[in-house]
Length: 377
Image (tube, rainbow, N blue to C red):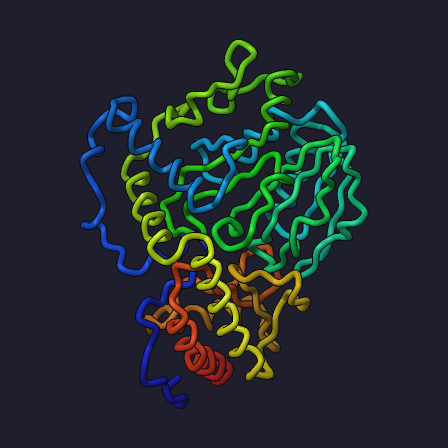
C-alpha cells in the first residue's frame, strides 16, 4: 500500500458505525452524573433519573401527551418483540421487509407466532409498494432500514382510518426525521442509534389505540415477565413513569440524559435533523464526485439520511473487508463495512452525533483505501 499517498488530515472523530453510533460531540465519561450509580433504580433518585430521561425524550421527539413512553429491556429488538408478543393475534397481520431487521419481524410473525402474515418485500435499496398495504390488518414495518439505506418517504401512506395497528420499528429514524405520532400506534427504538447511547435498553411508545388493544386483548401464547405491560387487565402505568420491568443500567440512563441534553443544546429535533441532513448531503457530494461509488438506495426520496449504504465498483466482500480494515488501521474511519446480510459495500452513519467536517474529511481517505486495496489485490 506504500504506492498510494495518504491524505494529510483525518476526521477528528472517525466514528461512523451505524450502531452503537458516535457519541455526541464533547462527550466524556467524566461529564456524566454519577449520583444514581450504585443506588437502586427503585430508589427516589433512580426513579427520578429514569423519569427525567422519559421527559427529555418526549420533549426532544415532540411526542404528544396522548402517547406513553416506556424504557424496556433488550434494545430495539426487545421493544419490538414485546409489542408483537403482547398485541398481535387480534387481527390479520401484514409485514413489510426490505432489509435484515424487517426480515427478522417476518420470521417472528410467521415462524414463532405462526400468524401466517401477508409479506410485502423489496430488495435491498428499495422499499415495497406502500399503496398495497391493507390497513384492516395490523402492519409491521421499519421506518429506516439500517442495513439497506432505504426508508419510507413519510407517513402519508399510513391510513388515518386504519382498523389495524401500525407497528413502527423506528430505530435509525427517530431524532432524524419527523415522526407522525398520530399515525404511529406502536413505535420502538434504542438509544444506541441516533443518540449514540449505550446498548441493552429499548424504548416503546404507545398511542391510545395500542393501549386499548393491550387492555382488551389477551394473546393465546404465554408471555415472559419482561414482556408484560398489563396488570389485572390494565396498562402497567408505572413502566411509563420510569418504573422499569427489570433492572436497568443507571450508567446507560445517565449517558442518554447527557445525549438528550446535548440534543436540546443544538436546537432539539430541528437541530438534530439539520445536522443529519448536512452530513448526508456531504456524503452525497463525495459519492457524486466519484465514479466508483454509488448509493445502494438509488431514489433520494427513499434514501436514508442516517445509515447511508454505498456500492463500490467491482468490490466483493473480501475487498470491502480489506478496504474497511485499512481505514481502521489508519484511524481514519471505524466500522464502515456494510452489514453482513447486505450486498457488499460501505455503510456510513450520518446521524446528528457525527460532525459534517468529519464526513468531508472522509472523502480523500475513501479514495486512498479504494486505490490501496486495488493495488494490493
